[in-house]
Amino acid sequence: MRQKICDLKDLAELSCREFRVKNDVLTQDAFLIYFKQHYYAYENSCPHTGVTLNWQKEQFFSLDGFFLQCSLHGALFKPDSGECVSGPCQGQCLQPISLFIEDDAVYTFE
Ligand code: FES
Image 1 (cartoon, rainbow, N blue to C red):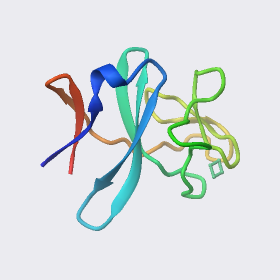
Image 2: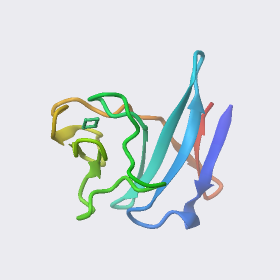
Image 3: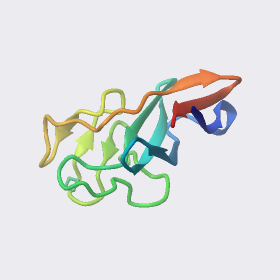
Image 4: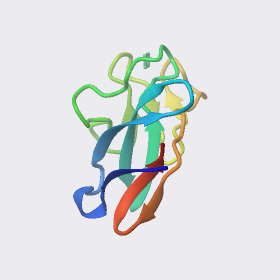
């Protein structure tokens, strides 16, 4: 079953949308980003300790806009792959979430 996250027109470059995904076992916090004209989504869980990454609602990018940043210890993640390139979990990755685009909106699967 599909789950709509947002309309494409509502997601500007470097903006984010938080949402929740369900699997067989649990419901997980997640977020969608629009970066260099591509959409990516990840579980909102830092590989270092499992805390949510964002420091404010829908704020995931570092100040320079080049990385996603964990608010607790500052780990930096590549937006297009989720790979941590700096910080205590360097080399680990955010868990990606599958997306698809239909009818000018971004969806994921429930
Ligand atoms: S909890 Fe994210 S870098 Fe430590």
